[in-house]
Image (tube, rainbow, N blue to C red; front, top):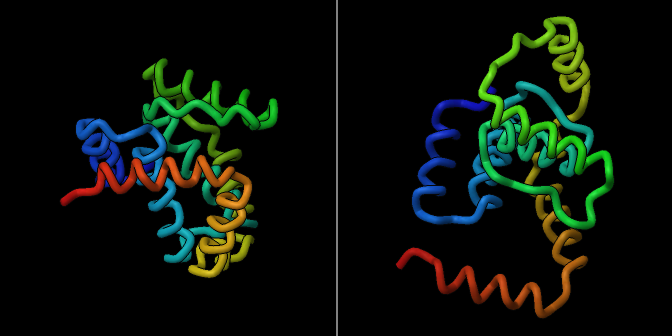
Length: 146
C-alpha cells in the first residue's frame, strides 16, 4: 500500500499536467526509499522499478506498458489497471502477502544504491536513439520550473 504522501505527490503531478511516467516516478521513488530503509530488498534495480510501477498503476496512474514489453508484463499491467478501475479493495490473502514480504526481505539492498541506479539509467538510455534522448532533453528543459 503506497503512503498517503506519495499518492498526494502523484496527484499533484497529474494536476500540473505532467506525464503518467512522472506521476509513477513518485511510487518508484518510494520503493527505493523502502529498500534503503531496510523494509525489504530487491533482486535488481529493474525489479524495484517494476514494483513501483505496479503500485502506481494500482493507485490509478494511467500508465500503459511500453510497446516492447513482454506479454507477461503487458498482462500484469492490464491486471493492475483493471484493479485500479474496479475500486474494490479485495482482502489480500495473508499467506500470499506474508510469502511475498518474506521473499523480498531475503533479497539484498544494493538494488537501490546510487551506483545501481546510475547503471540502470545508463543502460536504459543506451537503448534509446540519440534523437529520442535529445527530444526528451529539450522537452525537459522547456518544462523545467523557472
